Length: 373
Image (tube, rainbow, N blue to C red; front, side):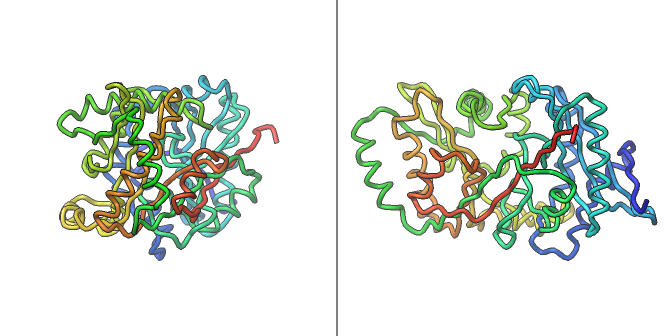
């Protein structure tokens, strides 16, 4: 067999796992290198609270010369399986050289590992769950690289489908060109403002932890019935927020209140991927310099999340979020805004975005396979 699969055990193994993408994407200018320090922290069970309720195993594939040729992360998330009454394992962080046999070797191993855990189905890519980066890019390969949205070569679709994985769900990214606030939004806001049923305010950075507790409560309530949703523990939510703290712009994070009670929030982040490309995975010696110099010049943004508690969804709060965000983007002459990701069948979310000019320009796919097939 030209490829063998071995578990990641030592620190040296882990570094090989983390650095493999630099080999895979060596000649691909569309790929954005992650920060290695962040990746090490993410995979550290002592620092990442996701590991409190999940088992994660990392594997590398090696070619006949002993060189790493692929990788995969396998996850059994007890929180997911308990919440959804399932027996599902997730694979993610999938990479493979341009030889389908390397990817199939990893997927064969994943199937056997999951079956050994008594699971019924495998699904992915999930890095490591739906609360993290997920999906395989299947459309929009020439589009702008966006923070928190995975990129992969087109050949990965053939590898996964050729092995026997089938589509479970597509995740959509929509493009907006924010030159002028749409007339539809302006007219709608005139009507909504007259009712005075809620107010919007910006995130208060000087009360960071208190504000995060508000967002955490809304998140676990507003997304509760979404496909694939898993409640986040407070520790998980704070962990994720700390990673974003350096780039959050409070004027792009809105909280809606009804009679002083927070009921929804919208978060838009600057797309720092062009800076990450220059940093090439490293903060030092020059990574921070690239970040500090370039941070103020970012002109592309991602609307990463927008949610409203169910009893308050027919008050026009979503329209107010769109209007406030759009207005800020026009004021700073942003070149592009992406709204992602949105489930392909989430019509109540997709239709309003299309009405304000949103166009689907990227599609990511979640796959699944019955482990008895």
